[in-house]
Length: 118
Image (cartoon, rainbow, N blue to C red):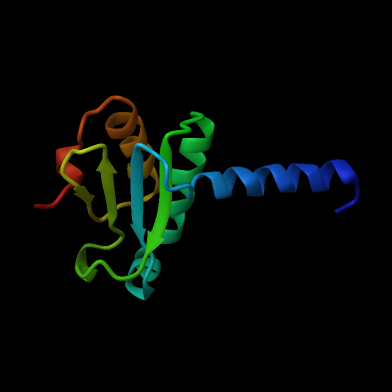
């Protein structure tokens, strides 16, 4: 950090990240981040979701982490809770699929069935 301006940018990024964890949101996205999920690539999925939400300025979306979801062979797993709709579980995710989930499911209300289970 070399200037007060850099510190302000870091602060703004941190506040934006914290805002995504706010529980007063219409959409909640849960990423399985237990050891099984992380080893399967959940961290890049989580980062891609956060970046895509920030890029699209989606203020009504909350992103949270959870432990083991219980289906380790399908990791990385992303669960989407949107309004009063039934939970949608996306499996075998990667960063590109995560971006597509934001574009199709969150923005355009189209579940990507080929990524789901159950």
